[in-house]
Image (cartoon, rainbow, N blue to C red; front, side):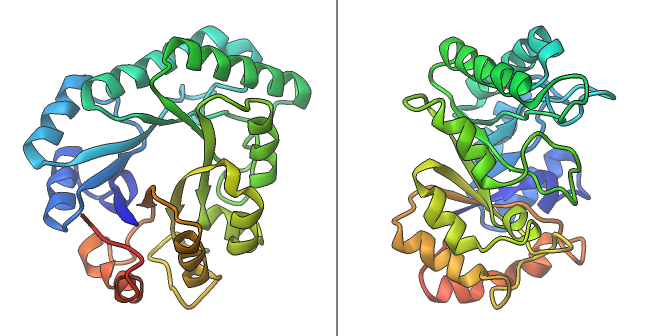
Length: 263
């Protein structure tokens, strides 16, 4: 399995250009960026070309201050969602990225769950029709780190995806969020494998480097291997020391078993 550096977290103490250089120096060939909207899309394309990195995943932008966690399940924000999806698609067109995590946003008191779900489904269908070359991701975000997000468990995401069968929309499965919700990585992978299109990892509860001896982390990687997972594994954690390279030794047990590689 190829590793991807989520530079927004893994190199969070560095500017975007320095984080790209650091990821390349640490041996990564693939990266993720949460919100590549500070610069024009071509700027990111140029930076990737200079470093030799490939962009695997971005998020749709949120809107401050009301909707920092996205717009896709917000009934009163459809036009703004479509604009934000266009921003993400522009970055993808410039950089060659093909995967977008579509942020749903908050559960709302002024709308029912059914109303929000219906809008989410409509927005995802629109996004596919408008940008058919993109694969759209949905991810449950745990209730401790992201209170009141529209969905927080894999089964809730799967419920939405089942209504979109046949479209290139899948589950972004993060070991960290699963563990924080008190769920077992391997059983959740087995249950929802048909929907999984991307995997991310971090150590719980502090979101630093994972410990492969805890929380079923090693077993999760072994399960991915047995399931012939051919996608990327995004390292989406904040280094405990503040320097990514200092903590990459946690990968050694996985590398020794031939489970992960940088290139």
